[in-house]
Image (tube, rainbow, N blue to C red; front, top):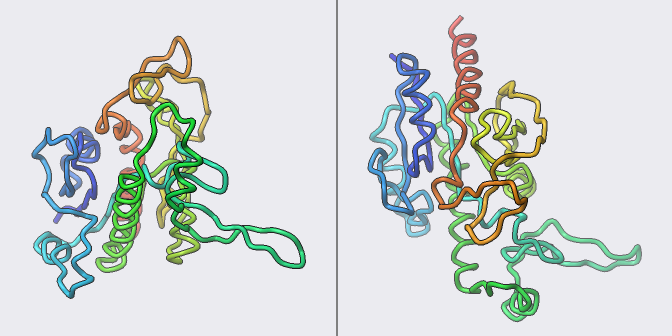
Length: 270
């Protein structure tokens, strides 16, 4: 029987699924799971991974997943928006802040992920070209935290041989996992344009219980950059826009990840 991969949040352009079909068709059985924000694809099992029904004693999340073959590998790319440093303001970002604490030895900051108060939010973003919505920020933060929390719950519940969680290298998700949820892993860092010139540099962390032996990041100037289409960082750079395109992962990078997973599986079988 082939090892089973659950690819959580692989419901956009399905890069994990594409990589398995391209390089590991005979090695793995893969199930893509999630929602497509652009509603363009149907290759996945539709499931809201930000589900909070467990609060009311129901668990449709696990009821659906229990119908699938148990995973040997779980790959996950939870939404990065609310964990990103792209919208940084003093003391944190527009999604969270680290409150100041004062004592006899001076000032310090807590490890908390406190919600930015509404008045402070608008004060700190009043000079922004595009004024963000506080309501949208709160909902995005809730969605991001639920996705991250449920990803951890799924991994702990089904106990795959290997788990890999993807987010930007500077994402606050890693601090949230370590310091709030006590969920530890190994940081595997890679730059996307080291694997494919058609990608931005995008230093990315693949948080795992396994050393994935990825290429050492070169941090080279990329031909592409990520944005909304109204601003280009460098004159010669081309823009990558659209939620699904911005979320793409180079297939050769996924190939390296799955090669490491395959080695782990083979070593366990000896």
